[in-house]
Image (cartoon, rainbow, N blue to C red):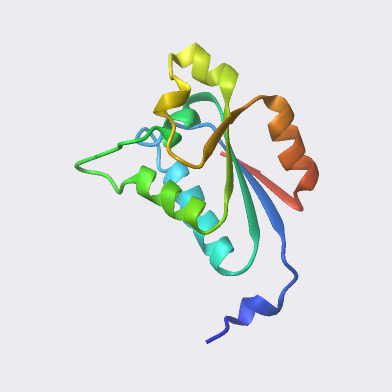
Length: 124
């Protein structure tokens, strides 16, 4: 069954996540939004910056929280483009080998390109 929203024009959303995955609910909420938008036929770009880089850390296994890593994996599988700030990774000691599959290390130039493409930009 087609959603009533499917008849709307496809939008490109760029979502910047700057909060760590288990310190606030914002990354979880933004990934739920991204997943819903993808299912409705929209394009999603995600830029992980500041402590938000940890959202892309592979092998997450929280015991008392919804697994944000699984949500990110699902969003990637639905077609989201996920970029991670390399400067923020370096500052926090995260290596590129620690990123989940489908996440790409970049610079602010990558984020700028995502913003130039976007109809709407969300930063959390």
